[in-house]
Length: 251
Image (tube, rainbow, N blue to C red; front, side):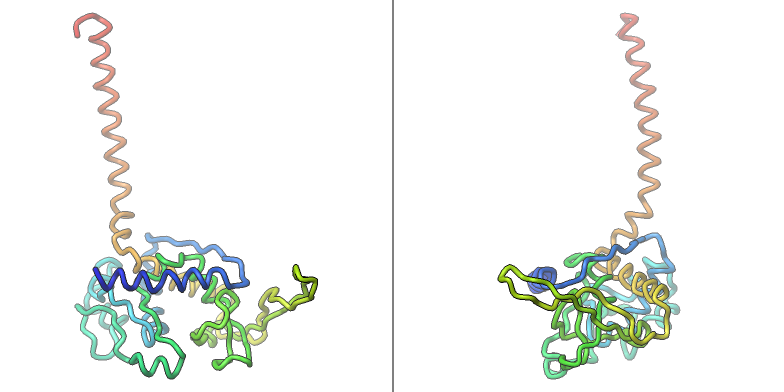
């Protein structure tokens, strides 16, 4: 519990500062906990692109398999990398904190709860908002999270975006160059629609990671609603029978 609270305390200030410093409007993403195929694809994307730097210490491979309808063999083949065991949490053992500070200037945060802290639309927009910036150490910047120290891990799939600026006059009367929008300068291996679908699958999985119990909640919801509807009919019939006796003076 102490580790959970510490993670939330570390993520909330970062989320607040990032949300106030970006230039991009948030794009809406369709999150569907009933789309098992999307969640499975998102889990694979997370393992292949995110887990080499980030961990998800509150999630276990085995839990993911059980929730997403994957057999233990399937989980091992599609999600488990290196020497990790299926019953272990998705901790990142490949990168030390010292190496991360030297390489990126910061320790990559654990992503178990990032979707709950930032929101699905924020993640969806952020992961699609990297653009080329030669002035930065990593050669990229982000329209939603300026000066972020994360590299653009999806550059092969998305391609390279360029920033388009516009001139605006500020309150001080001076003109300033501000980011207007991003344009695709070099196409990637995926079309824009295919890339958006890929990121949607990843965000879908990260939303699930933030609250795994919602899978069971979505599966139980039709049964609960059905029970309540049947119970409502029974209550109505009982009420009608009771009031019939009241009106006849027999109650």
